[in-house]
Image (cartoon, rainbow, N blue to C red; front, side, top):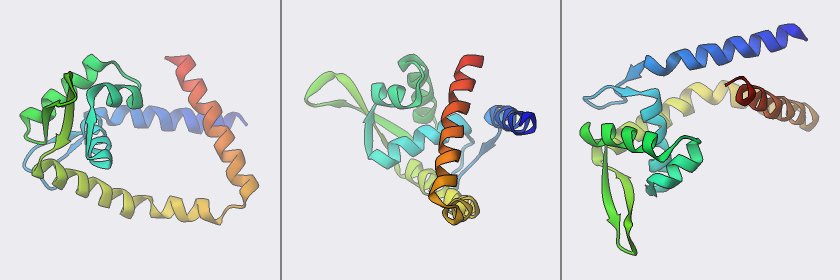
Length: 145
């Protein structure tokens, strides 16, 4: 049992160490992990409010605003004022942002297929156990922060 928890904690540590790794995702700029996941959220929704990104990611609006500003400076996103509420900013992808978004989607399709095939091979009970494990593991991470 301890081995599973240890493997899980090592995985979490490896994931957290990827924050400084970047990729161009088919563009002419370096895009970091936190940035490409914001691009993913925007691309999935076509346009989104900064406050919605903040809620979905679980970080402050100030943090999201900083990331969006970096993405704007790299030419990946644009902001516009919501016509129905002048105090809210909508964020959408530029053509370069769409290139990065599609490259990221393609990356996940190629590299996650093996895991998806494995999960599909499991019976419903085994998938339920994994789901329960992930729920408890997420709670464990929140308590360790």
